[in-house]
Length: 228
Image 1 (tube, helix red, strand yellow):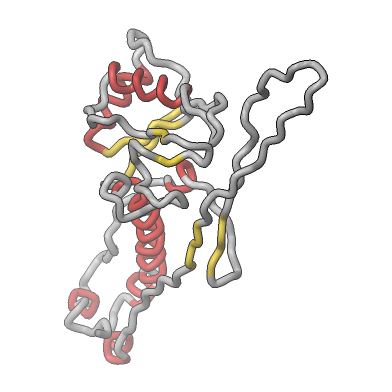
Image 2 (cartoon, rainbow, N blue to C red):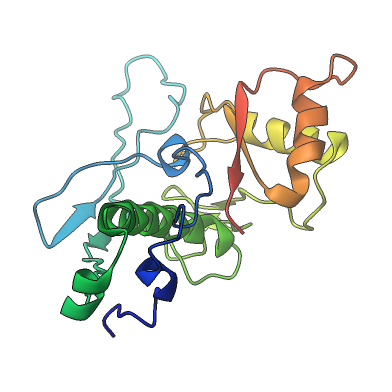
């Protein structure tokens, strides 16, 4: 549907002093702080991975070394999508508009705001649907799962067995769980938390946990807000 005179009737009034579109400030970019961003000129991109080797066993004198192998992990294909939105304006709305520059010069910025919000919402969906299971990784389970299968056998959790509200206790447990993570063959991996992502409803708790001089939790450099 084209934008017509009825859509913006006040712009036909020569006595109108000022017209603005939305006028609200926007949050700075957030998704790139959470996700790795890459460019692509293909219809799709494919990622895969290999496990490392296991730990060394004891070798008796004069015997041959034991040989190990690598394990091929499952692949994940990312299909690129095109997002598009535009607008049309009737000839009559353009001709009769008494504030042409003030009105139509604002439309591209409004469209740009919508594009930015679309990117943020699309990226946040990965986290917001992390437990529901609609977004899965190469291993075939949901992003946040208590049983991510390891190539060398067994599973590994990246979420609590029982979900908990953000608090000193739950954040301490999460930090310890991250540092206890292993690689695909069970070797200790140096994993450290660097970013706390919270919904807006938890931003004051996050501020208190990370910024208060009386709280024991330090070491996470910053936090960002995830769209609900």
